[in-house]
Length: 428
Image (cartoon, rainbow, N blue to C red; front, side):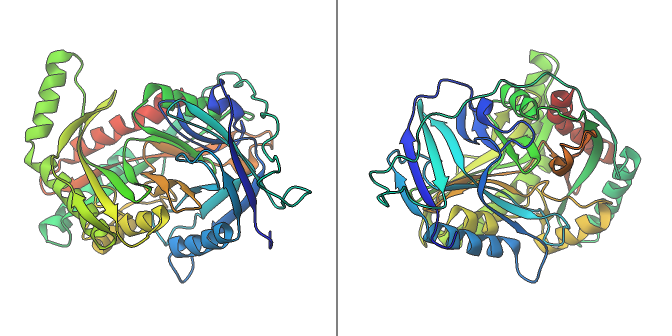
């Protein structure tokens, strides 16, 4: 790869479901309402894995991506979000995690945006004539494959039981009362398996269908549907959506309206939301101008939940990439707490497991620094490395809740159960 990658994107008529092109055992996808990008098959042009070390992993990934993109020759005739040289990435929540942060450059990417579809091919060498502009890397369209049979997974208690979770919440409330921190987000886990040979695209399809307004993602065995955009950067415009403050939806129109009104008027939830918004604004301010976080919070409706939400918009001022911005924003108060260092220390103390990539940034980045990143929520991590062994595929699912003064341990446990519902239903 010393001579650099050669990349070509061309508009192409792709009428099929994008997921039909993904690898069944290890899909890589980023989808919302049918738009997005998908890696075709399992071939990769580059894979960068960063273990825990002496420097932030986002710094190491950014340096690796700079080397890849700066030496690449890109012929992009489409110029839409997700075209040209792109990499999928999933980053750990905590620098101390034993899991790897990963950046993956596929050999072939297909995408759809606003009714237009395309194919990107990525090679290690230019066409035989050496002229990328005249060479044809795209060639024939790849062959889609039908999704495999339906399957069902199993899930059970993980390292943090329901009783243990409530005990951790009580410990956090005592620390908040002692002014050690203002908010901490505590998660719990479920563990299980899916049958050997399961087509994991089924899970991505179920999540994207049932929760169309979320980002459905699959990167290196991390599969989920996140309602929370960490940051989007496209042609100098930066946007983010902050979610904090949650309640379950009602069983009918009357109780549904009552739940939404209660959330909107809740001092506890509005305080939690304000923490999260201030965290995002403070992190984006050094990199942007015309920063606007007015107009929130509003009620975001999902099939099973209401969230308090605020949209943030700004203009990039310093040339930071989407990965740089994701690094600056993570971890937000919405998934860690505040102050950040104290909240991370509390999470390490009170959660009896390694979060891995849960609640970390997941998304994609292109050669110009554009990209879309979500927070990895409503998700499960699958051990896809041994998926061809004939044994069931292990998985761990996660859900959390923000703990502030006034939180109730039983109510926070119920919130995690509601947040588990998307992944639990999809696995079933």
